[in-house]
Structure formats: C-alpha cells, structure tokens
Length: 164
Ligand code: FES
Image 1 (cartoon, protein in one colour):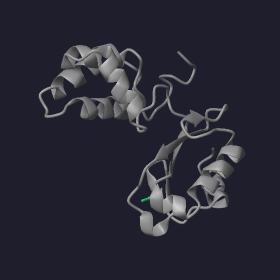
Image 2 (spheres, rainbow, N blue to C red):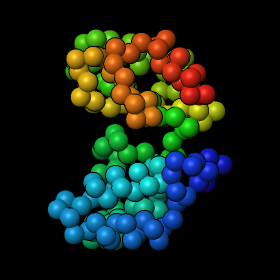
Image 3 (cartoon, protein in one colour):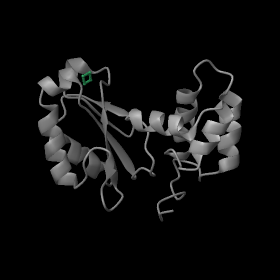
Image 4 (cartoon, rainbow, N blue to C red):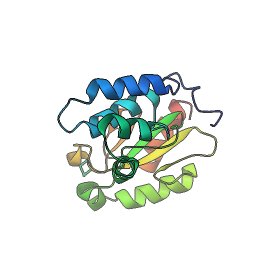
C-alpha cells in the first residue's frame, strides 16, 4: 500500500466487501466482467490486486482469465492514479496529426510515460485509442475534459492551471 492509496477524495478507499457486493450485483448482466471491472475502477480509482480473486469467484472464472482481461484493456490500471489523469489519444487520426511526437514531448516534460504516474504523484498519463474527437486531432482528455488540437504547451498550461 502506498501513501497515496485511499487518500484520494475522488475515489473510495479499497474495501473488499464493497467490491464483492458490487461485483455480485452485476453478475447477472450479459458479459459482466468488463462492466464490473469498470465499476470497480470508477469506485476505487484502480483495480486493486484483491479485486482479481473476488471477480473470478463471483463470475466463476479463473484468476488468470480476470488478470488477462485487466491487462489486455488499456483502460484498467492496477495502481492508484495520480492527482490528475491525462489520456493521450494514439489512434490513427491522432497519429497522423503528430500524436506520437506529442506523447514523446509530454513524457519528457512530465517525467512519466503512458501507463505511469509522475514521481510526485501529480499526474498519470494513459494511452487511449480514439476519444471520438478525430476532427480535432491530436486529442487528449484531462480529468474527463476533452481537448482537441493539443500541443505540449497547452497541456502544460492546463496542468499548471489545475495545480499539477
Ligand atoms: S483517433 Fe484520436 S480522437 Fe479519434
């Protein structure tokens, strides 16, 4: 457990009982695993390692199957996010408009690559594959706010604006 874990007002502190209740309440849905994992991440900020056996047990899956799903989808994280979450689109349209150069520049400036959090915990960078904002590529999302025609300077200014 890190100092950051459970200290984030955006998310609830990890609670295996709540996680099991949540998973069980959604178990009868069609294709329940992904919605359950999304619900757990929305509630706790990430997929806690103890969530794996809970979801496996509730859905009668193996732990390996659940781990495989969590690691396959870029949306899921297995550690608590930083204070702010920056999602950078790396799909085709954004790539054509310089997304990879943007990713490289921001990785350099923030000291964190996609899939990781800056050492001061201020920002987590994630890759995402199409935000539905292709007309304004390259696109990004900062704390749920959709951004278009993104430049490193604009992202840095926005992060400064939110105190990151
Ligand atoms: S490809 Fe980036 S928003 Fe669609």
